[in-house]
Length: 369
Ligand code: MG
Image 1: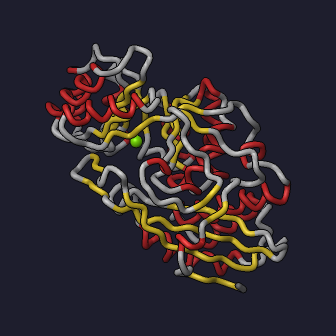
Image 2: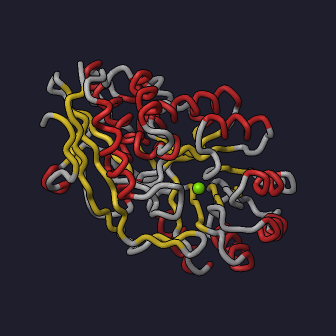
């Protein structure tokens, strides 16, 4: 089987809540997502998706996905898409860095492999370790009272895990954490994600102030040495996200005992192939994971669900259903949240079918179509 072409579609994903806000006054009102179709000479097409969290979260931006695809895709024509190791090495050789550009291609090729093998992607990623997996709900940055109201609202919908967007004024963040913990039961999980937003001394103040609160601290500061310094002065469970960009970063953080949990995002690390490698290393070394992506619609949500379902339950801290944050459905067959849980489909591949009437005309066509 050979790759004969690649198409990319641009799609806007508005938010039911109207906006999503996090540290450093970052806000997105409409997410800009890219859907990729990888076409083959066997008549099988695979689908992937990449949606950066705006241009200021990671070194990634929406138009950059499309520019990168235009650069990279012509160099992948003729490769067997089911040979994922070969594909990934070819992508590395053809374009240095830019993992978020490679992620939707890799995702689409896993979809093709599943369709060829007549197996769901979760079976290819290791098998059904779990059935439905538990979701967290991200709580957009707002006043402590408004965030506590949102936690209560989503708890009533069945969520038991919540990730607060903090990383703002440390005094307000301390109030946010306390207000939200108050509306939860002891069995519920609360994470305070600063998204690199605190300086070292601000982080030191927050972790000292909430030391008696049952809360996880996620990515307090921008750099590895800062995060490690915060980690070493708090007993609270600790999550790293933005600085875990690849296997090298994960190995360094493991060697230093820098975290209890890794936030593993598919497009941040370059696709399902690399996410699986890092997932397997975390399992082997006893590190829990939040498995998710930077954002996305139904296709990203399906890919997350397959990786999460194939991850042993004791190591899956939480995961996300981005397709429940907005009204636009870009594919049928994607898993939908039931209560606070999500289950990857049993159909071959990712199990999704893009809605071409929603995606419109492709914005990029490479190869034979
Ligand atoms: Mg995070």
